[in-house]
Image 1 (tube, rainbow, N blue to C red):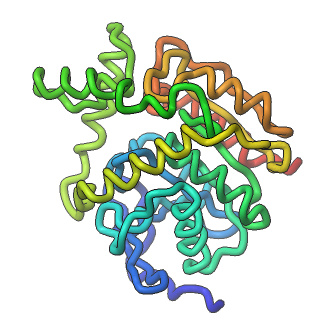
Image 2 (cartoon, rainbow, N blue to C red; image 1 turned 90 degrees about the horizontal axis):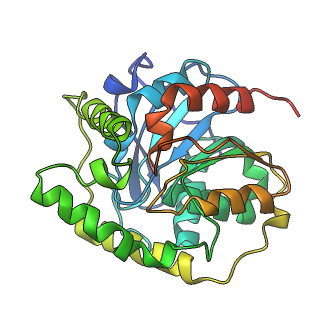
Length: 291
C-alpha cells in the first residue's frame, strides 16, 4: 500500500484548531485529525459511545501530541464519517483496522476510551501485529460487570441533565462532589473551545447501533485475554457509574502484561480528563518504554 499524500495544511500545534481531514476506506470517507511530531509509531485514539472528534478533551490530546504523532478519528458512520455504523464491536474493530491501514501505517499504539476500549481489545485479538502498545481507559472486558445495564446507569443522569439544562456528561462522567463538578465544567468548557470546522453531530442511527454493540459486548461470556500479550496500561476513576471501576481492576489482573494506574480519587468515567496532567504523564512514560 502506498503511503497517503502529505496533508496540504501544516500540522497544528493544538487539537483545538487541528484541521479535519478525510481518507477513503472502501466506499466511505473517514474523518480524522492529527497533530504532533511525525516519525515513530503513531498513537491512534478510539473514543466513547455517542462521541465525535469534538468530544476529545484538547488538554489530553495536546499533552500526548507534545511528544507523539497523535491521530483521532470517527469510525464508520460516526460524526462526519460516512457509511453505516456497525452494531457489533468486532465490526467496529475491522473498520478501525481498515482506517489505520488506509493511512499507510503498519504498526500503531492504541488508546481506547470506554467503547473505544472494547474496540481496542477486539483489534488486539484479531490483528495483534498491528499494535505495539495499548492504553485502556474507563473500559471493560466482554461480559464485564454492569455493561449490559448501561441504559439503567445512564438514564437518570441524562434526565437530570435535561431538567437542569446541563450536558449529560456533567453527571455521567464526573462525581457529584465539589471537585467533580468543577472538573465537569472545565471539561465541557474545553470541548466548546473549538469554534470553526466542528464535527457533525452523532446521528440517532449511529447512537442506536453503538448501543446495540455495547449491550452485545456486555452480554458476552467473558473472553480469555491471555492471548493479548501487548503491554497494556489500564486507567479509570474510582467511582465510574457507566463502566463500573471493578472492570478496570479485572482488566489489569487478566491481561498478561497489564499495568494499573492507581484509580483516580474522587473521579468517575471521565477521570482521564479530570486528571489530564497526571494521565498524560503516565501515558507518555508508558508509550516511551522500549520493553
